[in-house]
Amino acid sequence: MDEASRSAMLPRRSSALPKSRAQKGVVLLKKETANLVIGIAMLVIAFATLMLKIIEVARS
Image 1 (tube, one colour):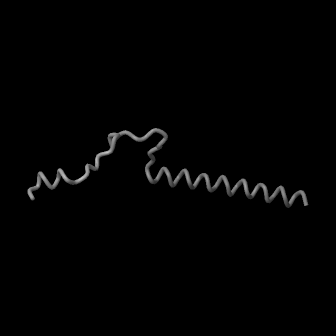
Image 2: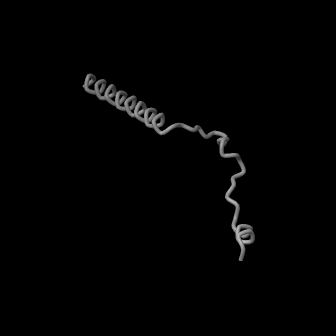
Image 3: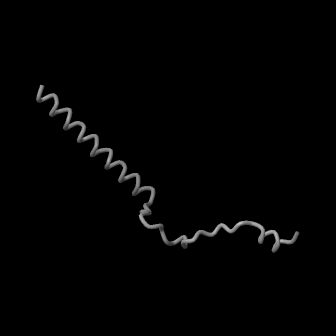
């Protein structure tokens, strides 16, 4: 079996969209940016939890 007939038997791996175009609704971020966003979100949640605990203790 030669190379041309063997490659014709293999399924193509190309996607419908070009690789440079992202799908609708997909945000492409660098790993560092994603880590920064996650870190800031965790800090905001921790601060909100702390505020709720302080308010809870102040009311009791």
